[in-house]
Image 1 (cartoon, one colour):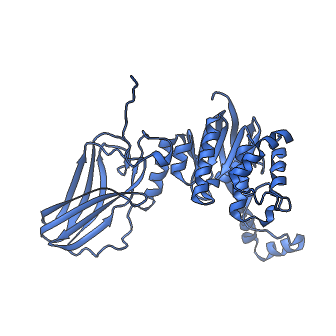
Image 2: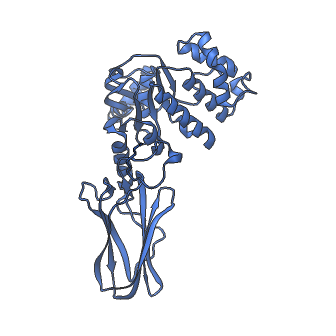
Image 3: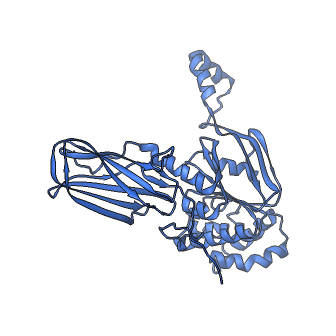
Length: 401
């Protein structure tokens, strides 16, 4: 993994916003005479930068993930690397045969059959007919299109389209594979097959650049992640660090929290929470498998005599991870700190939600999904495949005698 096969410097792409109809010189002059300031302003505002000053390097055999919000510039970057579009500024070098799957059926001719499109795609990749024939049966079996392989692809459903498109891109052995969000398409079984094949491609030593919004898949497949934000590189580094930082930023977009479903809080209510041990830059992100102290802040508006406080921790699938309750609590009016200290919270990396509740003599006073979410950003110590990776993230030592 010492040789760089993709190298980009200062890449930028400027697009024109909306459709500008050219009315000719006469209309342009009329527009300027009617409102010269507005005319000049429209000229300035009709373009925007989808990508700006992006530099990156991908080494041979590396699996690089690209993450970020919709419209951040990830697909634009892949289109530049795929030579589909030219950069407005900057340059990129790519060394090797590139296969790309940026949209469902990209490069397929609708009038040609699945068989003919398979050979066409292989030829575009620079493969010989013998190479394509050697892989053809495997491609058809993976796509599960044995009965329809000689049907024009214009009659395919979107699911059939993407199955064949992915099978061709993954099986024709390009040295560099560029994939944009294909793992989010298709049914669950096909997604599992895609993940398995992507793992095979990575283990075979080929270079992969993958755009995905499914962060667990990114954690599983990628050696390194680049976070694209508003057309620029916001962070570039090890997978678990960058993905966790991205999750934390997404969760902190609403620091005040939703009040939906909460009672008015006439006697008392929760007003916040934070991680106080270990001390870190972000009080809502857990970065260690060591001791952890979590504090919830409760404001009591009047004296409570027989209070009951409950707390539960849920993962992103809303499965209960842990819970407990404390009874017979007395609270005077004012702000109270309810603290829990754990020897360890060995949780799988990802977002989690604390649910805290308060009752007084059986009456519900508050029930709050504490926001922002808690982001666990520790290193993963489990199986790299999701189906064998549980909720506990416990380091272990292995030996053979």
